[in-house]
Length: 82
Length: 220
Image (tube, rainbow over all chains, first blue to last red):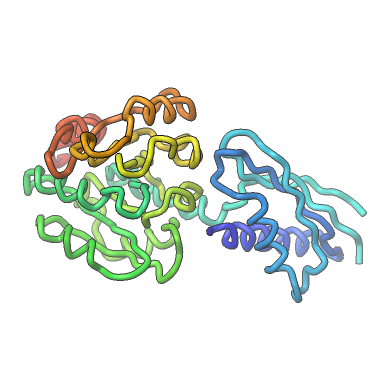
């Protein structure tokens, strides 16, 4: 249920990183989620897609890697110059 | 295309607010616990029995979270300790910013022990640090002993499992030792107390768990 908040948090961080790396646009963001983090990856992917749609960051891909324990961390951001 | 490393937690906005809360709690000597359990697992009832047992001089306070209504705050206010309701208006969990807002205007130096009763939910509150010293998970005997395996996140993060409503054990098929073994499969070191807010069974062990960690008398 709270995956939408998590997805919004990811997008906020992506926007901040893009602003710092300017001129660039984000293509893909990677996060690592442990089994104990209380996050359903499928639900997160769904919320993420819904939040990206029709906004400045579209298209943007989310890659979810299985992490350990309660990890809920960023891994990387792929950018291309604009 | 280039790939840059991104570090940090996804919920870093919440984590920053939680770190500020934790620092405030430390500065003012507030011992805070975050109670998490399903709707109807007995969080409010356990807090009622807890407040009822406390000396009025004890500097305890409660923040209670719900999606709607201030019914829980009204129940808890009867015991004479400061209580505030947080209504999340739909959100399935409390986050650190809600707690910060709810604490505004409270002099933290007058509080030694703060109970934060989260929104009834075994999943979402797990991910949100509220600056607490401990997360405590409640599991009532009417819920089923497999819950720790189905909802491992909170059992992994909680330091104490309170198995509630144990007065109902004769009437339900719940096997306490199976529930406890399941919780320990997820979190081998988790402390466990068995309590009933109705018969008051085990209440002493619960109170002792809190008392060992929080000062019973006002700090000088």
